[in-house]
Length: 229
Image 1 (cartoon, rainbow, N blue to C red):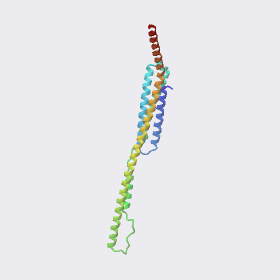
Image 2: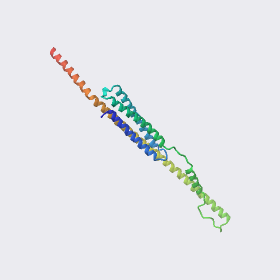
Image 3: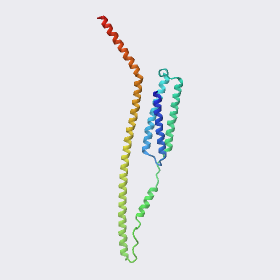
Image 4: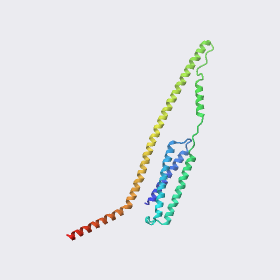
């Protein structure tokens, strides 16, 4: 398989991944750190592949006969590069357009304030009209103390829940980043092995010719030595 076509196929596979990430981001109302990281890493990989293709076309254009390429083949590869360049720019524009900006609203805070205000409302029954004024005031004070204790307890539980949620979220991000890094390293290793195999296949015939030449020289030297003896 032509190495140029193979690398070009890798480029379009990466483009497909980026388009999928853009589609996923468009379904979110808030920016997703995981999707943003995946997009940036794959976008950087695509740029590296494009640079490799650009360098390969430049070399083949300088020595077309060495690679058995016609002017039409070189023109086709230049068109592919131009199409990739436009696609890379368009993907970045789509991502910028699709990613929503963080929106800060006061609705949740207002709702929380309303809930806090509700806690201070008297949940108990109204004092009986038969009670003395002193008894009524004492009962109201006891109810206020109980409500204050309930409010403090709810705030403590809410803070603990938020801390636990943040910790679990941070650990999830760390695990996802590790998984992505391992997958990224594996992909780069596979690409490197493909290029090494291509290089070995190209140079296999040249290495064989060198070995045959060396053996012929050795045989000639041995014949000369035998004749001299």
